[in-house]
Length: 542
Image 1 (cartoon, helix red, strand yellow):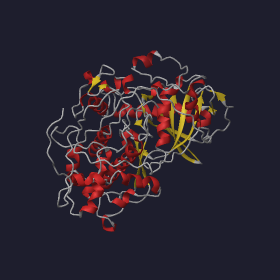
Image 2: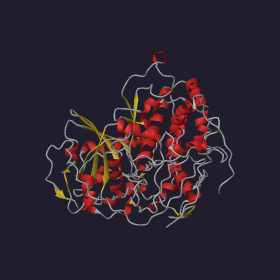
Image 3: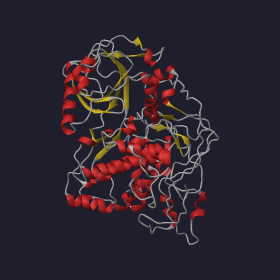
Image 4: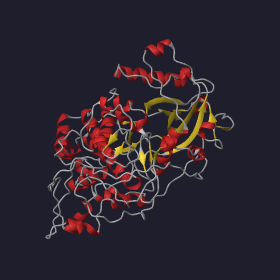
């Protein structure tokens, strides 16, 4: 599938001396040692119930050492990745000793009980819905994630976000009216569905830009009135926005005494992007590059791919005042809006914390289990799901139509599709989606938007998933961060922060190695690597 390539420059051509330019020569994908074999499996095959109990019952902080620096390898001229080996041994997660969390607002919590779905030896605090939202507290449904409903709970102690995941337990059958309306119940989930996201949240704990997990517990029983009211209000609002939208989560009126949920409490990250009004181009710059930098960090540390980064899974919060143009001390474009951006929901994500260790194992949700995510056309982001799978099948930008995604584990360029492989191009697809979504939903002055689009024209040229195959493409979020640095939009010191042990790590993927000299001209000038569309070389299968 390879084509003859030629060198091409793009982005601002730096006039800095050679030593200063080395910073921007970023490898196209996170650099790591290449193991002989890897043992991976999608997280639906995990059998270690004891490990799940430890994960859902407690919280820990993972320290990611910068000592695991990337090995030196020469830059590649194309985003085609190094060969990977497809493993086949089931993942086993070791139990972790963690601290017991505190409960959100248990007015009269029930005694801890044994929860089979969490692990035979596991005990989680069990609350009722009245415990979650007692008199005086306010609960508002704000979103529906991959397999969970998301609520904001506010009381005199502050605000938290709770993610509610229905576990395998009884529920009232649908009424005739509900059946006629086309209600599609989200299936309950077992521990094998949940352990992956919870483990990935542990791995992301020290990386800025990702949501903070607080506590986890079980909620059991019939719903309180407040929960039913906010559920109804949420769906009435969605129906006004999209009359054809289906309801995927059961009404709380159907909860029984034995209906159980795993509830994950998160820090309040603000307003979902889909509900946040964009009035200035400073907001566009900051939201896009906050997300890109967070993804680049996560790519480097744990080979992270979000795989579901639509406008409902980004939260925006105002943490300061916008800085007027006349008061700015920088010439760049990033960091003037006063916004903080947080990435949510790792239900479909893939990550590998020990990717530099031979024989270590990634966690990845197996999207082949339900192909409806690729055949559905109910929302714009459904096309991004198809693009991800098309890339696994073909290895290029071509997006196959819904009818081409009806055979699970279909043969791709690497053999049968497996979502355990690391393909950071999926992060590029979602960044392209976010860019396009913000441009289309901008509420500010049209002339400001046009100026933003002119400034980012070259960025979009290489980001656009519909670009011609002859157009060079970004292959990872790290690639995009390098482009922004090269263009002068972000300054190097802006990648540093309070948690320097983590913040410095992003610089490690934005620096070159001793072999870079092989890529330099005699007079010291460098060429930006020519990136073919995200086509990959074929990998050996073991």
